[in-house]
Amino acid sequence: VGHVDGHLALIDQTQLPAVLQERQCTTVEQVWESIRALRVRGAPAIGIAAAYGVCVGLQTTSSGDQKALDTRLDEVLRYLASSRPTAVNLFWALDRMRRKAADVRGRMSTAEQRAILLQEAISIHEEDRAMCHAIGRHGASLIRDGQGVLTHCNAGGLATAEYGTALSVLFTAQDEGKKLQVFVDETRPLLQGARLTAWELLDRGIPATLICDSAAAHVMREGKVHSVITGADRIASNGDTANKIGTYALAVLARAHELPFYVAAPSSTFDLSITDGQSIPIEQRPAEEVTEGFGNRTAPENVDVFNPAFDVTPAEYIRAIITERGVIEPVNLQTIAACMAQQKGTQLFSR
Ligand code: MRU
Image (cartoon, rainbow, N blue to C red; front, side):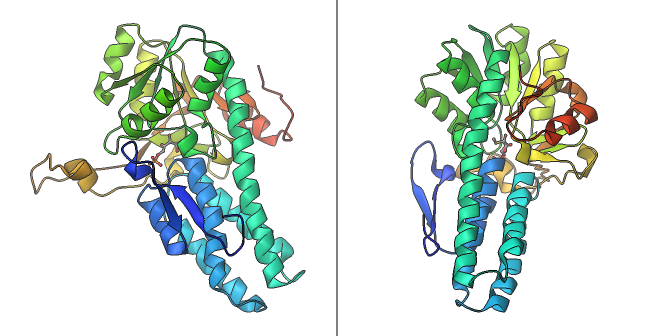
């Protein structure tokens, strides 16, 4: 931490909520494994970890050898890019590291280049923190005092540099004095809602009620929730949004109950290179996550399993996307392009 020859310290999210424990990554292989095994997870956090992972990976190059640095950088970027396929923040962060390296290549010593790359990883980290707080400020006006809100998976501080995306909106609403009741989908099969979101909300004193994913329609029907808010792993040019499996079902349910469905995400989650959600690669995870999650066998030995980790919610189901630059509403190709074209700091779409 903090030095080119340091290491990456991560909260091991697989141990939560029982144990709050750090994992020290001293090799790029450990960073890769931490991403793949969801020790660090959530789209922005994956990008930040990968950026630091590049710095850790470059520690094996001997100083003064530009060719060795070039070769190793290429190898490390490719390797980290293979850790998980869906969250575009991973590729966005690796691309920033690649561009920064190209920028400074040959203009200074290899030691200085590595120091600049660490600085870039720190910038990615710090910018994410600022983006999360800005998302909260823009989104809090969508939540009214006394409302019930449903969220899915974990889009909180654990999934980002700090404060979160969807949860940042709720944290900010609470800071503004609004009383909330948050319904938390447990989020099968890895229980990010139960293990992480419930933990984060309780930690901040926000009333949280854990429900099985399959109870969402029922709580909507009973009038207990007034909106749904989730994070995102990748948003296509037209607003189609990939997020944790089950998000699409919630958006359809929200439509059926005439509730607004909101997505909160930083600009680093938008992938303007793809026209729609059909091109988003959906990660397939091991069958054991479904058949024997957390060590308890709950299905017959030879059953076939389909375990996609994400789904895509069509843009037409999304009332608004809350970004650090403001709220995009309605959600379509034009409004997204206009928001993404804005200079940082201008607030064209802000409420
Ligand atoms: O598989 P995960 O736990 O990495 O999935 C995470 C999500 O789906 C989050 O909602 C998303 O990354 C947004 S995090 C701010």
